[in-house]
Amino acid sequence: MGLFITFEGPEGSGKTTQIQRLADRLRQAGQPVLTTREPGGTAIGDQIRAVLHDLRNRAMDPRTEVLLYAASRAQLVAEVIRPALARGTIVLCDRYTDSTLAYQGYGRGLDLETLRRMMDFATGGLKPHLTLYLDLPVEKGLARKREALQRGEGEWNRLDQEDVAFHQRVRAGYHALAAAEPGRWRVLDADRPIEAVQTDIWKAVVPLLERETA
Ligand code: TMP
Image (tube, rainbow, N blue to C red; front, side):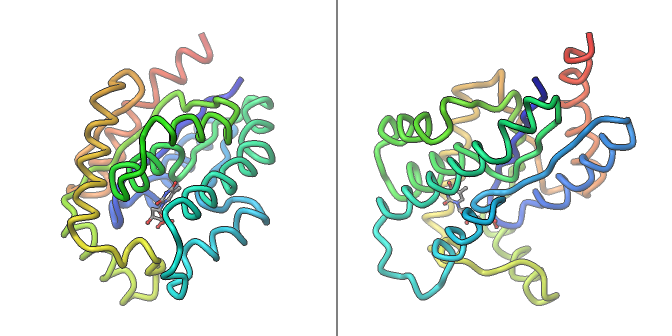
């Protein structure tokens, strides 16, 4: 069984860059690695992602939203993540169930226990071995995202449109989730140079690799 590592964090926290760097480093160390992202990561999931992120879909009910995230995730787990783990691959996933708890639970106010049951159903109970949370003040994250857009990178999606209070609830939610499961989570200050954050990520991953090969 391979290792399943998820990345969480607000907009603009640098998840994509950090995942790419970690994947390169693991490959250099001779490890088989697969990177993927949510929502999406499969042909079906990418179609669901387009509906979820479409700025015209302002009328989307929070329940519709959560079911679409769950549907995309169910497909990703079945088609990509479980088979890769079964081959002994290290899977690095950009967002997973904790995004739903943070955004739809803490952000939108949907019941957390209901969401947990839905996540269990969608994933068949597959949990990450490690969750790396890249923490950043809300305004900084949104500003970084805007700068990236000006460079022609990234996308401005339906959730980015939400007000600062929504993103603040999401961040507080992440902090609560991390505090409730300290064994699985590492909270990293993402308001630092890329290399400094990557060093901390590597420090969190190495003990898991050693345990795998022991
Ligand atoms: P990203 O691809 O830039 O990380 O954007 C994904 C967006 O979708 C981000 O705003 C967070 C949101 N999201 C949820 O609200 N719930 C979820 O379950 C997932 C996976 C993402």
